[in-house]
Every structure is written in C-alpha cells, then in structure tokens.
Image (cartoon, rainbow, N blue to C red; front, side, top):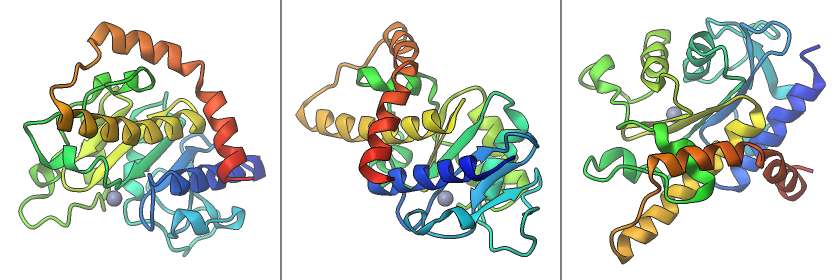
Length: 234
Ligand SMILES: [Zn+2]
C-alpha cells in the first residue's frame, strides 16, 4: 500500500493547484502516508505542473526519502514533516507563494480575514509567521531546517492556515481534498478582500458566522474536488 492511489492524488492536487495559480514553479503539496503514518508522500523537487506518479516519494519524519534514497527533495520539506509530527489530525499540507496572498503577509495594518461563506476556516488565522524571529537577521525566509519547520508548526497551532511573512502561506486538512480546498479558497478570499478594500471598508464574517460557514463547507469539499479533477487533472 501507500500506493498508486495516493500518488495519483498528489499528482491531481499538484495539477489543480498549478491550474488555479496557487502554485507556480514553487510550492508543494503532501499527504500523510496511509500505512506508515509517521511518513508522508510528496513529489521530488519539481514544478507541480510537471509532476507524474513516478515523481512521488515517501519521506520519513526527518525529511529523508525512504523510497528512493538520494532523490532530489524540496528544501522546505520540513514544513510538512514538522506539521505531521505535531498534528496527528492533519492528513495533507499545501505550501504556496501565491502573489494574491503575499500582500497580506507584508502589510501589518491589514489582516486577511474571512469575507465569504467558503472561507470560514480562515477565522483561526493569526498575524503572519515571522521567520526572522527564529532564523535571525539575514534569513533567506525559507523553512529549510527541522528547527524552522517546528517553529512554523508550533505557530500554526490548531489552525487550518498560516501566513508566512514575505513568503506565502500554508494550509492543512483532514484529507488532501480539504487541504487543496483551503489553499484555493485562501487565495480566493485574498482576491475578494483586496477588491473590497478598493471599494471601501469590507464587512467581514463574524466569528460565529465563520465557524458556521466552516462546518457547512466541510461537507462541500468533495464537490469542488470532483470539478477540479475533471477540469484540470483528468
Ligand atoms: Zn516556500
């Protein structure tokens, strides 16, 4: 096991995230290994649109490839390994550098907040994670060590998304479909909020509304996934 089905899900997720502009040459998506649940599956170091089933590797909790030692792996694989270590409920992780979301990571006076019914999960978002507070002056902003991955995973806490200052964001989910959904709609929310801010002062969802929306949306994830697979990954 750990098999072809999971690998295909990583490829589909990669295509969907590339087609929706959440990922470009950079960024990645992973899934917890179904059998060896301390391990996770992620593609080798490659642009998501170019990934195929044979590119999906199994990595151990330290970020080493077990299925193909010596394979080229992402520098930022520690984002994934440390979230899986800290959050047993998380089955999939997306890391994106979306230019639609990035402004909210560098302008501290404007917070990314839920503005529409499919984005209730953003209610748990905090101020952006500042890697310089951990890595120090002169950081390249990358989460390129287990220590930095742990700091980011701690910062994420129990939330479903976290922003990274000057870099991008992460989303997680109880399934790969949910993690992808959350990534796509983090970007959608950012675009809507930016448009609304040009018009005036947006009316954000209240926390109670966001909570209700989050619960309602969880039942709709499969519907979006089915469409996206048809449009972008079949
Ligand atoms: Zn990155």
